[in-house]
Length: 492
Ligand code: ADP
Image 1: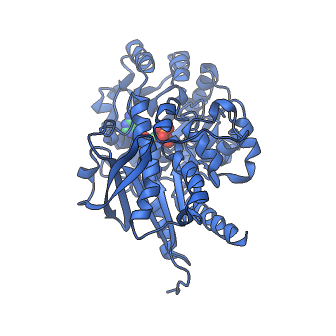
Image 2: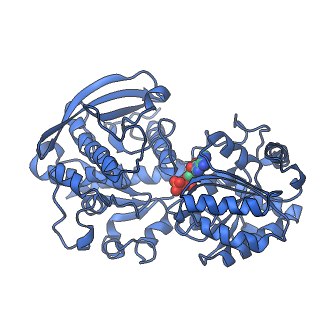
Image 3: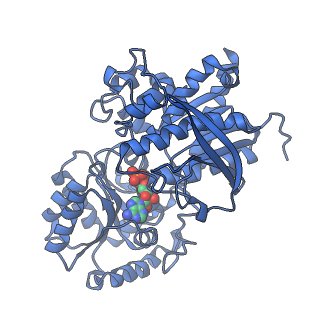
């Protein structure tokens, strides 16, 4: 056993979601897996990492978590005086979790995200500021704060301000991960004023962005991580950067791209308790049991010889659902069947339901969030559709590949970084570049054609299943980045 000479590296990981306590999408997977993966690396490496997770105390967390203990009471300065809050904590798998809730009877905690932006802004801006107060009330000071997306970006901004005025914060560094740039926290301005936060003064951000949580955090964070290398490049392009391309071009030095991993324990076809027949790389043929079971369940059993197309997604414009709605009718004369799972924008739900109405023998649309069904679809589906307009990382394609379900996806962001479409002998999926229904349909057509060639298809599946999508590699990149941020500081 190695003797560790350095004290543990302390990181406060601040997030809106962390599976299994709160998960709406990929941020939940990330918040649930990355801290554990980094902590394990520390335990097995040269220096322990004491990484703790802070979450808003959303309703429902208590029932999923071990018993809570009260940690402290905190006060965040506001225009009218102070906003008070309570902090609770629990420990799971060696990780300490802090849950923070504003006192009184605050609205917005019932759901992770609400229709009212003001409710969300109040919850998340209070939370971001409260995290910085929390570390003063406990006997534990982090070396680094790792924030995520607009919800917690203000912690990086506020840390920058506090570093100038309060010696306690001087040595603490900040890292802000970009999971989904277009959500800048638009509409938060009245709440920023409530918390006496001032707009950015420098010219680094365009003037329209200087009083929005995400840009404020991005400008003041010491490091920025985009959730895939391609997305970090795309952030410098007008098409993907929501008006902030200039900022990212000017800040190339502090911006890195690290591809997310997946929780390979939670997503393991050889142990998955949700699926009828477990399987692994050397029993790909077992998938047919799962396919038949899911086709039976949805009354599609006549289609067992056709490729089963699946979709497991939020139904939002980002996900290119329109391309499916426009493209799939071009392939109505081909042999396939489909089960699509998702919920979200009403017009997209209606568009998908229309497809089902046109081809009732072959299409099923399930408009809900259903984790168990998602597992069963990954385990029995043949092709997963991900025609995203932009995809910072995307986890569904990695989960699908681990389950031998081959992606047909747009060549953007993390999809481009995790799927190989060329050369043929390395193929793990199918990529297309133009964001239109025609290009999507053509790409899907070639996958449907290849599906008929049993050996060829099996090779694609096996290659996809062999890829190591665990967090190990990415967690190491994060840990190296944490360490370099702290070392650089000492050298200055
Ligand atoms: P995003 O975070 O943009 O929503 P990702 O591909 O990164 O997309 O992550 C999506 C995650 O949410 C995956 O774990 C996927 O299985 C899950 N998911 C998405 N929609 C549903 C749904 N309707 N039911 C169950 N799980 C879903």
